[in-house]
Image (tube, rainbow, N blue to C red; front, side, top):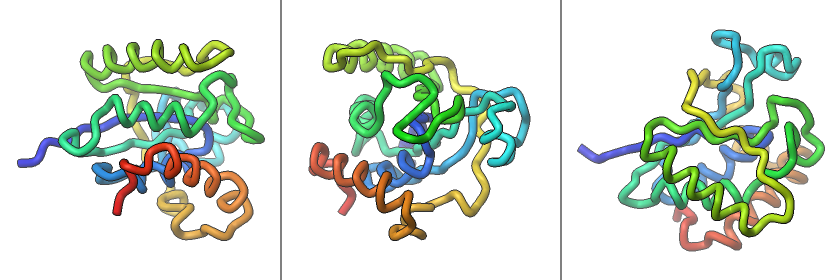
Length: 177
């Protein structure tokens, strides 16, 4: 049986994070959802209100023999700004905060090292939330694979496509064929 691992990350709009990780060799799935809040089974509307405390996140299932957790994190640092509190670009609110939720002590240790390494390349302090993984709630079906389903939609074209291009330029050897 093939070993698989999961990572739970948030870096602004989940459509952006999901679209990138769906293109990473070794990633078996990237599911948009919510984590880190108080309400069980929150809806998109509830999360967007800011009242639930959830972040938009992506649950990434990957083959560690093809891509390591450290490489998953390297991509994470490259595709969002971990120094802006509760915001990514024009997206504002606690649901857009930068988060790393770890599933075990090994991930915790690797993420701590990754944060320290990423900080060396940034002028401003990293404000990424870093805690043990809370319950993950998959987002509504219409949010899944959003970029693939709507590549010419305005937000996809203006915000997501450049992130994908940046990923492909920097991590060309990690792009799924």
